[in-house]
Amino acid sequence: MAVSATPAPAGDRLRRNVIGLPSAMAMSLAFISPTIGVIFISALIASEAGASAPFAFIIGTIGVLLMANTLAEFTKRVPSAGTFYTFAGQAAGRHVGFIVGWLLFLAYAFQSPINTNLFGYFVPQVLKRDFGIDLTAYWWVFAIGIIVFVAWLGYESIKYSLRLDIIFVAFEVVVMAGLLIYIVLKGGAEGQSPQSFLPSLSPGPAATTPLSGVWLAFIYILFAFFGFESSTTVAEECVNPRRNIPIALLGSVGLTGLWFIFALYAVVVGFGPSHMAALAADPVPLDTLARRFLGDYYAAFIDLAAVMANVAVLIAIHNANFRIFYAMGREGVLPRWLGKTHRIHMTPYTAIIGFSIFAAILALATGLMWGPQAAFGNDGFFSSMGILPIFIVTNLLLIYFMWTKYRGEFSWWRHGLLPIAGAVTFIAALWFSVVPLPAAPLSYFPFIIAGWVVLGLVVMFFIQARDPRRLDIIGKTMFIDAEDAPPEVVAEVVSSTT
Image 1: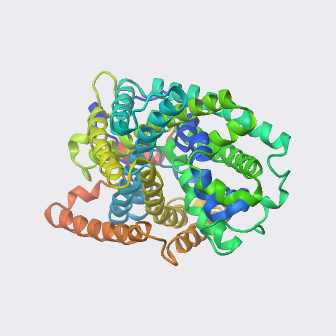
Image 2 (image 1 turned 90 degrees about the horizontal axis):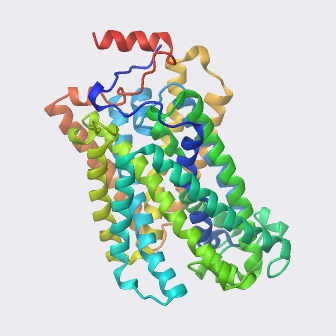
Image 3 (image 1 turned 45 degrees about the horizontal axis):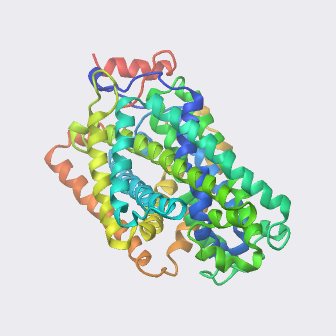
């Protein structure tokens, strides 16, 4: 049984075959941001998992690899800018597709405020610390400025945006690797700590037992990996997406997983296993380690790498969100004017404008509410909690999708056991993140997300009552390449458009 597909209107399609495998992988790598995860999230992970943070990252990497396998299997058959939203619509129909898209909208929307607030906080701190220029009161100017810059890049070309991402990611990893390798070779503050690869060391100050600390850290590990799936959003613009996007997904998770495990070990060794409270309380632990082990001059390189990483991750975040807004707009879930592409650049310019305004409002709202630094952690927790139910549902939907539509290709290993293991992993992560409830404001977030889903159900039934046809197309507008798609899919598309 073939998937149900409808090609996008000819005048509103993204440019085909404009990027290859390196750029697709750069999209995921830059969104994950190997540097942001180490510099700014390691303290959050250490606050829960303590000196066993490397072990926690091993568990987290396995869980995310399971999710990457599920997305890879979907993308081989349903390449689309709509990613989770399209996959759910194809697997389980319009109602499930709508709710997944509704929740995805919320989870992805907060990815921009996370990093724009971080940029607005961190760049003035660097200017003050390294150059004596105090612009910390104007963090919001930096936040809005970076949104405008990234929007302009996305408007001009996805190709050049991702090339800039490749350059920035390469530089930041080289600079960071120099420091981390030196720390490990030097023996850090208290010598090597092989026990960090086991859940046996004391938990962080925010947890009660080592094992509970590992699970509580999972939400922040997911935060570090957030965006690995972003390469799926450029499937319609990628050469041979059914081959290259799965490679980009699994490759980016595997590489960054190994990097994070090594980096967290180096950070733990650098501070010393008995000083995890100091690590958890340090807003920029890599800057501290650079000054301690290599001097102030190298700390300046670390700061530059962090700024470049922040720009790179925002380029990837916004490019992914532009395409999510575009995909949902062309199918009428969001306002249809978002589903337009520029007649020359063939970029989703209306979605770029719409999402950029939306992102700026969210960034200012959360930054002013909590302060830009606290907003980084709070928005990250909220966004990760929003994506966990989507991960669980998508893993389970792969089993149903393959069994009902591709029975001849069904593998009990790839399409049965692995997605079940992924769903169980993310169910456990979600459970331990909310039971018991964390301190405010984090304690409010599960109820806000539940309320958002209920609101989505109300909106969905309202749309269905007013115009049932608006829901019929959910998940069906996707990239169709006659040379690459199965013959039965092409035949179905041709018959649906004649």
